[in-house]
Image (cartoon, rainbow, N blue to C red; front, side):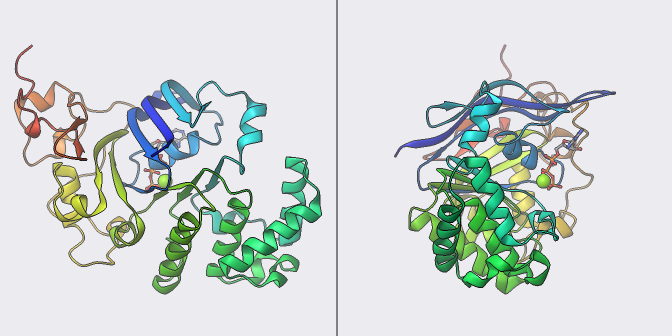
Length: 326
Ligand SMILES: Nc1ncnc2c1ncn2[C@@H]1O[C@H](COP(=O)(O)OP(=O)(O)OP(=O)(O)O)[C@@H](O)[C@H]1O
Ligand SMILES: [Mg+2]
């Protein structure tokens, strides 16, 4: 399968008066064409920073190093002009809180005009595309003459999705696309996202969520982040039924029944919260909270390594050498 996104030792920091916040600190993974990937981890672990940085970079965010490629496009060294060009056509984003971000004083039609202008495409063409896509997405064409405030949460999210996928991007990135919606609407939106992949309207999808049930519903693969690092990657069912990293275990344990959202719960048996990324702990960043901590963990950072089959884990528990020698 063709690789759509490839990250290697990718680092994104925030420059602040107190120093660098190491929000994404050496992350590596690939996403293949057609894959739906769920990105999970507690609040403040760098999920939004990671995915937003692929699309929009604004100070104080700085890409410090590593590789990020979208097919043949180098996203690290891309010019601002090129970035604007690929936005919506190759890569598209539904930001966190997108529902609230739609300015209420603009009709949907006005958004379409803005997109047409930005892309140098005739307005009629964008309008036509929107109406065609809206039909697939289950929106009446009348929405173009409406204001976001006149639409329900579910409808607004469909508008956001329609706008984001109007030019059939290779990669759609969605930051908590359903968290503001009721459970039934959430399910419909997730089904819709999967359908966009199935019909080839989007190539691949990476989405952030705090809801394990959502990931389980549509994701092929799960990436677990903790304190700016990827700690585990695996196929969805493998991760949900047999999590390996002690942190992933805690995340999954926090979900005694499907449909429970770990953001609103304290993680059972896991005291504390993720560390400040201004000054993260040495060794494994999870070691101060880990119930299975060993001496090695306090000084040496575990690399993300293949465990069996498709699983990758960054934990000394699974490393034969335990990192003891050297
Ligand atoms: N503009 C900023 N300046 C400095 N630090 C920032 C900025 N934005 C985010 N951070 C820090 O970067 C880290 C990662 O934040 P990020 O928003 O990416 O986390 P997240 O995993 O998306 O969390 P959530 O689940 O709450 O959305 C946090 O420690 C946060 O405090
Ligand atoms: Mg976030």
